[in-house]
Image (cartoon, rainbow, N blue to C red; front, side, top):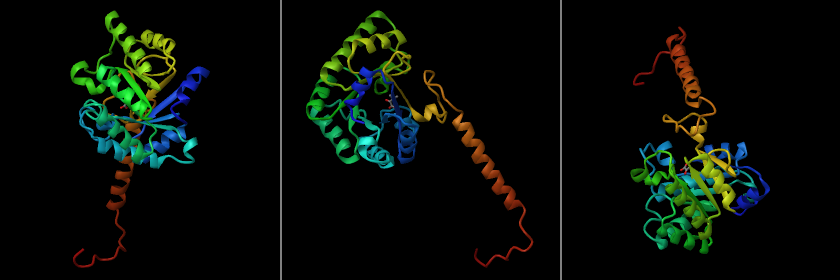
Length: 272
Ligand code: KIV
């Protein structure tokens, strides 16, 4: 799977599936489930590293987890899902040179094939243009952009006509800058459907309705593992509860076995 396949899938009407992974185990699950794209999302800052927002995750941490994800994928590269890595906060906000170095490091040292970054401010568009010209495919991300949490919060975005017009202009600018696809997070369904029609690049939604070319989900949310479930991304199974029941069962089984020692047990050696 290559970045260019995303537009091909859109043209042929084949739904695109994107799931996040953060290590080899989750990557192998996502691949075996048949997802087209594995996203090493910076949501790992919250899901895996225990931070309150995505801001603290570093480039080094994203690289470490991307390497683990790529190691978890099986078979020839041409048959593996596309690996996209989030550029973490401050790795692309300080100019195109630093962004190329950050994105290049991720691609060079992990085996990922594309990066994702948030927003469409003029500075971000300049960065995207440079990355694309340097041969680094870019996935855009608009709507709820968690790296802007201190400005936007986690609420639904583009609720009024002005902000909807702005988002449409930004989406078109991202396409013109060379993005290979666009994630739309937590925006009104009709706006996402309109953008799916308007853009020739693939539109991938989360909390943006069914009218997109594909869907992306945080795997831990889908599996019901995260303690705080986003309202727009319901769990498929009560994973946390199922895991807890299994683990609690094992713990109590061990305690019960320990509580019935056999009378023939050997005396303990001194010092043990
Ligand atoms: O970091 C992430 O997991 C993401 C998805 C929610 C799209 O950006």
